[in-house]
Length: 281
Image (cartoon, rainbow, N blue to C red; front, top):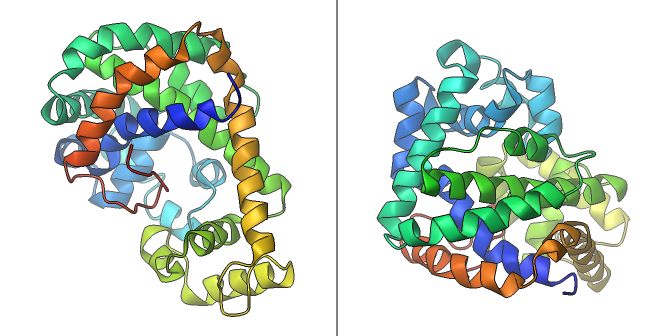
């Protein structure tokens, strides 16, 4: 298996995970447990595996968000709901969303979970706090909740490898986000809503990237920028790929997850394009 297969598997693993950000069951679960508003639900739900983490820890771990947006949600989130309550709520809600999108998931989950967990146990841990925190959670008794958690573990592993590379290349959060959208031909203005960066900070990111030859002055990507971004994605695949090599037939895992991924994509809950950069499977 070459490194690119890690990306192929990501296209069916990520849709299973992302119901936690977009599906009605998951958004309502955050409200029911006591979290206030979308962003407290997002930061509280995603950070809960690390315990009652400080704003600084969440800011550093999540990387691409404006720090003040994080600080408006954390640590206040832990005064409304304990991490333990959030964890129980998010797993149950994700399972409910997956069952609504893809009723076949009850047949798929018992077959896919052992494969996903085998990969997770083979994955390297250094520099990956979200991966480790999710991996170390108890496996839910509900097979579908266990499937959601297993995909979450591996998507965080891949994501944290990606952030290591961005940091090593000297890109900060807004610069990494601006470059990604510019290469995709998308508007960077949406980063004010999705990531919290001000128009002034985004202009500074464009200027910094233009100074490196990665963007033109008008914010469009240069060929050098496209090559640079492609190289980061290829290196992300290379960091994510090794644990999948414990599988004798990784195609089996893809075939199991593909119907669920397609059902999530077809549900309309997940927008395309989306802030995650997830393509339709």
